[in-house]
Image (cartoon, rainbow, N blue to C red; front, side, top):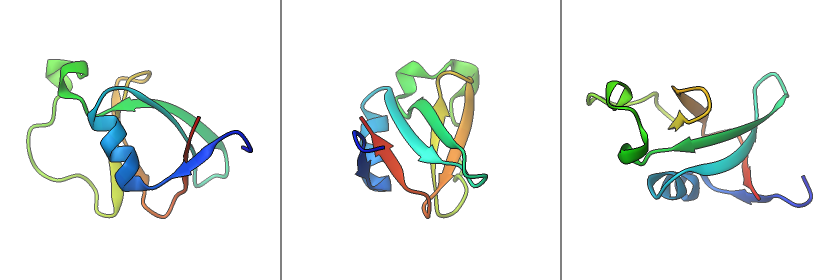
Length: 82
C-alpha cells in the first residue's frame, strides 16, 4: 500500500464523474478490494442507468465496470488510488 495515495470520498466521486477510475478499499471482511468504477452516465449501459432516488446514506455509490453492477462503499472506509 506504500505506493498508493489515500483520497477522500468527495475526491473519489469527482474522479468517478469524469470517467472510469481504478481505486482500492478494504472491505468489511478485511480483504483489499480493487475496483474500476464510474459515475459517467455515458459509460453505464442504458438498462443500468439510475432511475432517480437516492443511494444508501453515508456511502459512496459507483457503477462497477467489471461486475456490471452498482456498488457502494461506506464513508467510514478508507480509499486509495495509484
